[in-house]
Length: 536
Image (tube, rainbow, N blue to C red):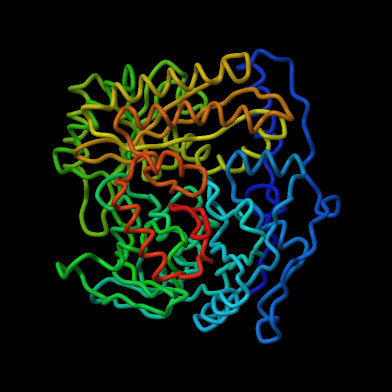
């Protein structure tokens, strides 16, 4: 199937650009917030203006049909989609591209590519949809001069088997979100794992980064939806047994979930699916502030009500996205089921919200499309279009990035206050002017929330990356010193390594390095992610 060309310098397809209205909303809104008349807009890079170094390796004849050193393909696979990636792309800095991009068609191709790269002492970067925002798919800097082969699995995109009795399906790992759902739809089934990157990210990418998805409670991570998997490593192929649960020792699946491509390449997986929802109840609730909303959400999460959507926006984020007027926090609350109406669950949740000062939009409960209309729909549209805004903000010198965490309820307020204050202070130091820092909850658990922060700062072109890192360091330090995790669902990559090294037990790091030496003895897989390269 022919596919539209992706942008090498931004999000989505080359012909998918912000509308004139979105561009105007972005430009006028942020000019007003930063107190400036307007912005100097840098044009995106053109492929023909960028000169890449010559490839340092060529595929053997047996693999040439699935390998390329095409100029555009090397540009496309040079970066993920973080702010530093965006800043480098707009600066025309493609100084460290992969030498070859490989598109395996099946598992044997993956085996053959790894064998070739091990023999050639070439680095292998697994590349699903390339949507990493933590430097997880970028060729490593330095790398001891070794050539780099990026392995893009998107040709491995088929549903291989479905089990309607056990509610499971087996997919090749390169399938992107919409294609996975399209293949399940004739069976009346859905995975219902919808990260913001859903349109372009892959099943394998979700698994190795422990991606967070659609459900705000219970089945929040892809971990909960994986039944078994096959993994190709440089030392051989392994497949875990397909089971609903097991107490037989440490889980082999858990070794590879979150491994970010350093131990092997996931080639296929059985995933737990479910009937498509037929019943839905959705509304929004206004709260005086984020903390009153948090108190309500904590009670809901501990009451066993388990809403599918339970997103809380602070007043500033609600105002920026125009889901509110900036005077109140907003809860987007949804229940869904393939089996039964949900009035009782919603009624009890709204009773809890009222007890904590919440004001529900009762009219939304009467609308079948309430999750796509009104305040909820406005936020949803801005959320889904968010990745497309980055390149337009970067072009204007606006630093926009997110950082997210999870923390126990007893520590949330202190973490929130420190993260907001530290990030604002860092923005002022780095840029000389105030910026914006907002917070929302993406997922909630009985023992704590997953706060998700977004910051905007007006930077100085030519210094954007240094300014970004001053802000990022302050924010990340605040998360760790207040008992949070460095990432709830964005993964570690290269960008979070410093804080991941502080968070994990040192003896676990030793064990992880030992596993890598056994599975990847030449250290070719994604060096520098999670652990130091074996040659270091």
